[in-house]
Image (cartoon, rainbow, N blue to C red; front, side, top):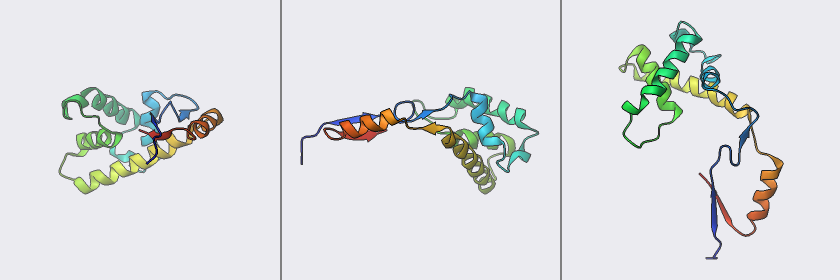
Length: 131
């Protein structure tokens, strides 16, 4: 085993940037619009209202010090709408919201040539990791 030291990077806004930083409304819109599950809500404003409410109250729903991901947020949003008994339907809605969200999110991300060059240079001396 060699004695290379390790540098660990955070991914977003360290290695990967966005062309424009979105606001919360845009994050919600990316999931909702064109997802195929819009009919669960009367419109985007209702979805967005739930999106905001869940963000404000999520700390009451997850264990202390536990980070939650966007999947959990969508689960709470759809369960608020249809209840907790319809698990398969809930999972289907979550997957459609996630797929729509990630397509739009990834389209707005990039890695700059400076970052690529820097990583190539320092990888000669250090092991690199991404969290």
